[in-house]
Length: 290
Length: 284
Image 1 (cartoon, rainbow over the protein chains, first blue to last red):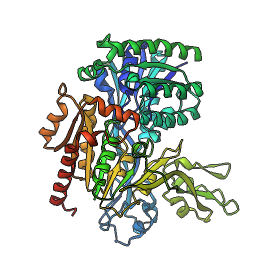
Image 2: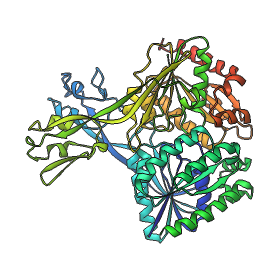
Image 3: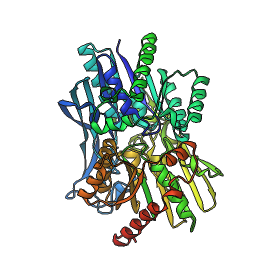
Image 4: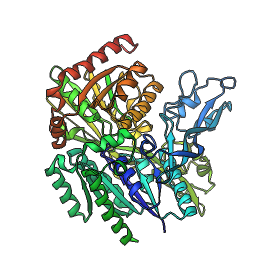
């Protein structure tokens, strides 16, 4: 049985990627998956050596052949995304690829073309295999790309007998997060003791619980506001969510990011110690779950 | 004038700059603040504008008129988003997958589909002092943020200045938020993550042909990568705020002024660049 541990936060910038990279070092033989596809950063810490690269083709975009178009305006009339301008040129950013213009065009001037919206990679790292991606700038379909990365990570884990997949998620609670949660065995929510951190913790928790994984919370920079840390503790206690770690603010964290290494590989400071303690606790709980 | 505040990376300080800039400007005139980070809307945690109204936002999705449907499957064949599947001769609509293009209604030969509204979130509005607030809140479990952001942008057109707090990332939700703005402020931080994601955000700004500047938050001299990138790319670094425990403290407690009190010169510098670039560009 492969266990899939997903790291989420709701609010951005709470420390998902830094913690994920350290967990990659601490866990025994994991497969890594970076599902924060529109601002992927895990590769900056795990030094992936790309072994396999493939284009990510999802959806289509309309193309209007100027020679065939009679400027009748039918496509414009039907398109709900304002994607066709007055000169019958399709705005690639607005086109959702629904294909309605191609259906209604009386001149047959619209061609629906496959659209490459990014690329994904399988890499080797010192910590094990890693699946990651680069979504093209201003592209959609992040949910589909997330699903693809997770599927690939599972294939690798099955082939090589890895028992754990660690997934770095994206901020927010929308499409990519929902795709990340689908199939997750457990979720580690990394939060911070700020009003915004707590607000977004609650939102991502409410989305996560719908998928019924094991849910755990880790409070990063716990010492910057002890009152808010206590408030997070109460929030979790009320809902029976184990708080598996409180990580103190530690200058070593940003030094490790600048050095491009996972914190626990380069530091024995208080934050690194706290992450190690957290992993002991979390891995025990995860094992018990199975 | 529409000022959008974005960042590739989350947690760099978008909301901090959005609410600080709004209060700074509200001393002299009425400003609107729109919270477009509908998945994790935080700006009103600081502004604390009392919410006077809450409007539900829906998107149209198809519904089947049973006695007309022959189960021909034209709707399923058309739908690019797999939002309709025909099972045992009956179409089943999967509303979360639907992009509301309306195409299935057009292709149905029996006119057996009509549209019903599906709520995706709310827009909260209110005002206090000189700030008009409108914030989108996406429903829990709802995957699609862009239609709610699109709706939000229709609010509060009266003030001269509208500030839009955008979601993080560089994909469809932030594109929906930032497109059409007169100036894009990209907030980043002094770290390789901040730099990597700033490069993506700059790519997005260029793709959208928007005038933009960079605000460096939690600036730290031990990593100069952001400054070097901006200077090499000729990008104006319009504000620089050092890591400051006082700022972090007020932020964690949800108190207002943060950088407002301590670094008003940085906010002035942002406004100066906005004014300069808008005179130069064709927007005004």
